[in-house]
Image (tube, rainbow, N blue to C red):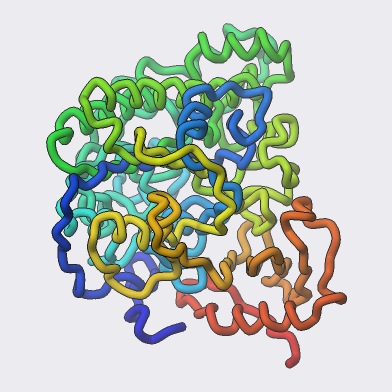
Length: 523
């Protein structure tokens, strides 16, 4: 690891590296002759590369997202920071890759107690949240505050609980509303959401994660699923705050991260949207007694309904920006944190929502296959950019460099990203490109550890790292998106170069949950 990049320390509360927790320096404001653009960064949760019509989806309808793509830039080779929620968000917020970040996997910190019980979390807030960022970590929010922006986050956090030092309001966001804990975010009718660190109760009935339809009830009768609904749907509560934030800050630059929980399980959506897809798809098998979430009569229809419901809200937000007179000076980004999940509630293979990559189990979320990390990514800026398709290889760590460039400030430290501002603006400055992208992902449940390198047209992939695996597979990725034709024997020099990259970019982590022990191949 580069010594100038970061200071390393051990944060005992969350067993996290203090990467990014450095003193702020060198960030001087530059005078700009035009108004700084506002930013609305929409981060979906577990949406696949092909979940939207503009990327080829034919079963789920996304007219609002498709309209943004038609009027903006649609990226084809854009990657998440990690194949799982917390580490991906950490890379997005800090501009660092998995070999350097504090958070490299979801650490639920089981040592605290019954962390998967919503009832226990209600009574003991210290059970909420995942492993936190180190105190004083510099984030995108921090940087935009320094640049004169009012910053907000509405949605899921997943980088520390309410009793930690790592909450959005302590990490650069002036306003926060949503779920601090991603386990509680698995219920779309929660008893409460957090407003700036305080619980705001919604009046929903209590539902415990993992409830199953009673054995004496008919799983095909839709009436028996009524108890798994509430009165306030969390995406509605959060969308109200999106509009309020825009209205309250329309007269000065704002930076809003709308980190929706859609379409992460559980499968819960408004009846009229589900009904539309039941009519379109026909009958299907229910998920009545699966582990982990809630019963759902029409899981496929509900998954599509959730995405279309968010799409409707995005369309409303675009109109609200226009009504407030700020649409043409607002950059809107829509992307996802990682690939689609595989569970009894989810039908990724049926939707083929990672196409042209594999959408089956073992190829999507929690893997470094393309389906786990290649993301849809669209960017629009009113009438200020020409519609285009970009094949620029890019990823979440680029956002720190890009937004600092946009705001006219220097980055706080050397990140693992490059600024995409030349691509966005079309200005004559040459677009910097990546020599490589690097990921590592420690063992997590069925995933036994991965390493991956994207270098130009080639991608190297190492599987089963936790079990000593060190055989690198090599793919010419755009010609072989399914990653089926291993070229490692034909191009040993490329494989060797990728191992050099891994050696240079990997750093060990003091938390064993987040550490990747590599069985280095003989040189």
